[in-house]
Length: 144
Image (tube, rainbow, N blue to C red; front, side, top):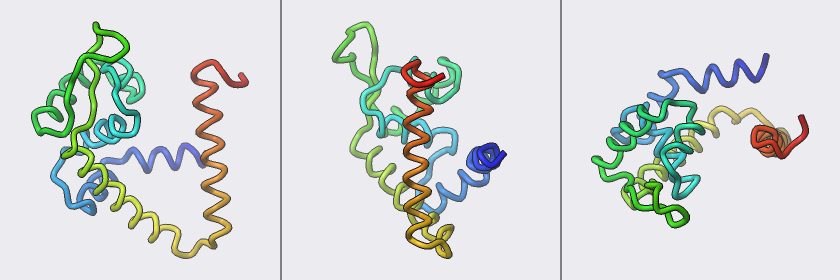
């Protein structure tokens, strides 16, 4: 139940809007998660990006085209498969994800202001373990 509560809060449009506002950027809230994913994952194909975002390929393709028009990402032939057009973040896009990271950090500091350092460290450690395990399980490499 706790995980559902966390995910439902993180998926709320008003939370995304606050993050974008706190970062001081002008970007549609539907676009910034894709921009962050592209920056974090490096060069990535649209099909893979759509799968990771849980969105339809055609929707993600249109959204990436919008990010490209804004100068935040660029498409190139994949280094590993010439048939695939991979998306990478531009320096302008990286600057925007840096602003989002800084805003996220400021918001987290407020959220955890009354937590001890040990409590924060425990949460981070357990979340990292959970993320690793769930990614492994989703890819078929972990325990069922």
